[in-house]
Structure formats: C-alpha cells, structure tokens
Image (cartoon, rainbow, N blue to C red; front, side, top):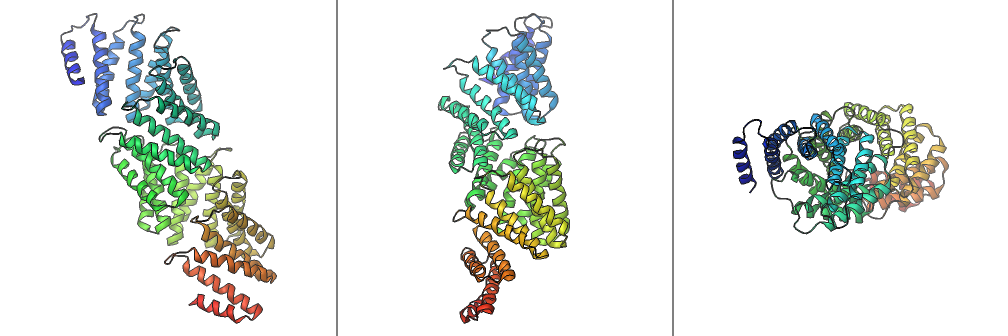
Length: 550
C-alpha cells in the first residue's frame, strides 16, 4: 500500500508545474509516505529522500501559512529519525530548530500541541544522549511532562507519552543515581505497556524499554526479581521483533546485558553463554559507523571477560580486550561513557597481567583506570567502583615491585570505596574483602599488627555478608584463614590457628577439582596443621599436614 501511495504521489508531483500552489502540499505528502517506507525498511536512502521533499515543502510554504507548523514538525521528525540511525549532530540540531519553530507557531489549545511538545522533548533527549548536557535532559523532561498533562485519559497517545517520559526520567537516574527517578520511570513504562493493545507494533519497543529500566534498578538494589522481570520483558520484546527489523540489534544487546547481569549475581554460566551469544548477534547486525557500535563492543568485552574469570580461557580475555579497545577508539572525548569504558579496559588488562605477568598490561591498565577516575565527578554513583578497581591494580603492582607507596595508595583508595558504599549494597562484601587483602599484604611487609587487626575485621565482615553458595565464598574463607594464621604467627594464640584451619578447610570443600587455587589452598592448610603440630606435638596434625602436601 505504501509503494502504491508513493507511486501515485510521485506521478502527481511530476505533473505539478513549478510555482503551482499545491506543490508544497504534494512534496510534504510524498515526504511523509517515503518516511513511512523508511520506518518499514530502515533504508537511509528513503529517509534522505523524505527529508529532501519535506525541506522543499517548508521552503515553498509562506511563513504565515496555516500548514507551516505541521510541515516544520514533520521535517523535524524525519531529521530526528535519520539522526537516530547515523548520529549526525547536524541532523539533530536542525530537527530541534524545526520543532521549536513549529511549537512557536502552534497556538494554545491546538489539538497537535501535546504531540509537538512530546516530539521536541524526544529530539532534545536524543541530543542529551550524545552530549551528556544535563540542561538538555531537564528541558526534555519538562517538554514531555507538559505533553502528558495535555493528553486526556484514554487518548491513544497516552501510552507513547508515558513511555517517552519514563525514558527521560530513567536517563536522569543514570546521571544522579536517585532511586525515586528509576521507580517513577518503571511505573510509567509499566503503565505504557499495560495500555498498549496486543498486536500493537509498539508493544515490542515498550517491553524492551521496561526491561531496560528494571535492569537498571536491579543494578542499584540487587533485587533479582527486577532482573527476572527485565529478562522476561526483553525476551517477549525479541519474540515480537521480526527478522530484519532495525531495532533487532538493540534488543538483542539489551537482553544480552540482562543475562550478563544475572550471571554476575548468581554465577549461572547458562546466563553468560546466552549473554555472549546475543551480544555477538547484535554486533553482527550493527553496521560500521553506527552510533551504538562502541557500546555493543564494550558490552561484549565485559561478557567475554566474565567468562574468562570463570573458565580461565585466555582467548576470551584477549577477544574481550580487543573489543574494549575498539570501543574506546570509537568513543569521542567528552562522551559520558568514556570513564566507564576506560575503567572496564583497565580491569581486563589487569586480569591478563595476573595470568601472564606482563607488566605492560598492568601499566596500561592502571593508566586507563586513572584516566577513568579523573573523569569521574565527586558524588558520581560509580566513584566507589572505580576507586576499588584502581586500588586492586595498584595492589597488583605492589605485589610485583614491593613499593610500600603503592600499597599505601591502594589501601587509601579501598577505604574510600568502602566508605562510599551504602550498607546493604551487594558489593559491600567484595570491597571489604579487597580492603582486608591489602591491609594483610602491608602487614606481611611491615609487621604492623594494627594493619592485621583491621584486615581481620574487614574480612570477617565480608564473610558475614557473603551468602551461602556465592562464587567468592571459598576465596574469602581462604583470605580470612591466611590473616588468622598470620596473627597466630605473631601472638602464638592457638585459637587463631584453629580458626584458620577451620576457614581453610571450608574453603577447600568449596574448591572444585582442577581449580587453579586448589594447590595453594592445600599447601596453606598443610602449613597451618604443621604449625599447630609444632606447638602441640599432636601427631594427627602432622598426619593431616603431610596428606595435604601430597
């Protein structure tokens, strides 16, 4: 039907002489039809043709003409659509200018006022996504709120308005971390999905957006119910998305991120395999030059690094680092995701250093993490995360060089990270364990018992916060065991060595055969038994020690 309409309109235009009073109207109508075809095909040539037609229509329309506002608004919509595909800042600037002019020409009470406010809000929001300018975001939210206030209950655009305002409020949450914003965004997106009838072509988009917000709240609160609901919504969205749809790659990428998040929380490798599979498919569907290419490369890099962490496959880590480096090359200076991508690359380079001992990787990793921290403003919700990760890298350098300045800096950063982490946050245990590890390492070099006391306190708190079945439980038990044994070595208190043995035994029970830390944990437990034998002369301890050394 679109093809037939376009064919008829093109014939009509060919028969319209220059200067004819209907020329502008026919150009505008043909531009609208070609835009509709673009929405079905995603072919950039179509949207470029539509923009050309609509520009000519605007140019031929006198400033006082009653259709000028509508034609400007339609031109803005097409320019915005092309910007969403190409990221060309000239298009979004021109779209906003056209939509602002259309709004100025729209009288109060006009039936299209709400739609024009909403579209201008959407365009300004799109510019915010590329520049990070919070003034744009505030203006976008204001426009969308006004549009929603003008939309009566039961209006067919109510679901669209709720979804779009929810998207902007979600963006504000991402910059401020205010949980009230993400809760409000989820509420709006849920209502939008509920108001969307079955079979509506917008259902997939609204489900995908709801999934995104639910996942974001999970990332702040750790509530697995939110994540389960996010994955369900995103899977339904994908099922409703036909092959070849221009949003297919984006929806695959979103579902991949949710599976990765659940893997990070539960350790279920099935989720990680699903994440990597969907992220690979999303990348295959992403053309070179697409504005989301960097984001998708960065996400795949994170998932591959996570699989490396579980399997130890260096090929995964190398592929992950390559993806993250490409993502950074595509990220312009000043981009709001620059700090996050630098931080993630730094973590992966440190992981490869830990396996290969290549100091070049560690140096590059620390450099990337330091740049990330420099780009992170005070009060940013990721400040603690970046402090903790940079500190871990500097601790790794200390282990190689023995430079006490490094371990002092690592401890300082880890303390700040713990202080910035709210009680009840799901990563509190990890940060306490990391702080304890660094304090213990300094104690091993200086013999300062205050460091050891503080290390034990941090490690015990970390263990109390670690749920049964957590993948890091064995490592934390082993760390506590090492600290208890160190204190025994200085104080001779047999209670410490007894607790060290108990912790290390539990760690060993949780360590699967073939795990790279199995030998070290057996050796440590053998040392603890041998040490206690030296104090008590109990033959059973010596027998246990020998069995572990074997």
